[in-house]
Length: 422
Image (cartoon, rainbow, N blue to C red):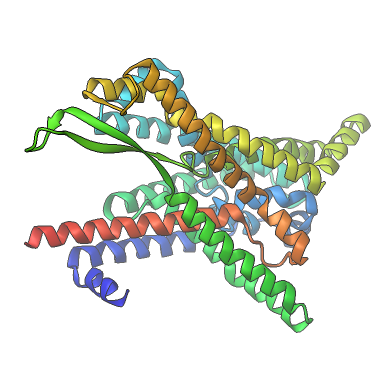
């Protein structure tokens, strides 16, 4: 390992990319600690500490804790993530956009530009909704209309600025910038959680802490295994032959977790929306509306309802998004155009049916995995009775995935540079 790190550091351009990436990430963390004015800290702590606000923990994934601190980077890269998901879905729904996506790098750049444009109105909408909610809870106090406009412009500009910094890392640094920013925000919250958990050891709850640690290590191992797992469907290219005249064999990799963390994002969006609306309506003048809002809030704070709904939504969205990303008919058509085929399967509709059946079976494993990861914090906290150190399966999934992907990029660039020097 040390020899590998030494090789990376000895490469001047790689060292420059790493230092550039670290510098940008540190700057992002500084921005995340610049607070908004007129904040009632006690009211904020009480609001975020309520049990029904467990859904707000998901929003912190994309803000690096800026939500709990109410910094100018209140929205983080959340609007960009939402915009990218919408653009991906619309790419499959709008034929013209689907054609653009097939134009190679130029097509991807056009869709990326659409994502950037869409991020601005989404940031404005999300920012206004958040400010209104926090104001209704007396967290942002003494705000005039002019103050709200200034804060809204500030947090929207900060979100777009952080998005630009993330893309700058992807272009001139190492790794996916947006993913690195999210992962860094997750890791940045660990010291405070560890500090709070230290009190558990002092109180003698050491066994629960050991169980917690063992579950954490097991989850990391399972995440790595599932992320790397794939079904290799054998492929033969009839038009490509080697010296003996035999057809060249290859394979089509079908990943177990094709959807990544997107289904979790979809599911939490469905779960957080009713809660946000209920919190907003809890201060209404109508007693019936307030009663309805309180019932919704009470239902969302029920761990059994929350966990079961979360599990089922993630499971369903995993299949939904997998078939958006991987389209058996299109893959079968591409294979036929390349003069390739799956041994024992006729090209065309039979190949499409085989791929659909195969991806459906392995997606069941991926969907079960993601659903279990999603509800993991609820299960672990009920077993260990530890709430100070949140073992977020989604957080672990993001961090481990980012580490693996960044390591792959470093290895590939190092190999490429070795090849250039030969």
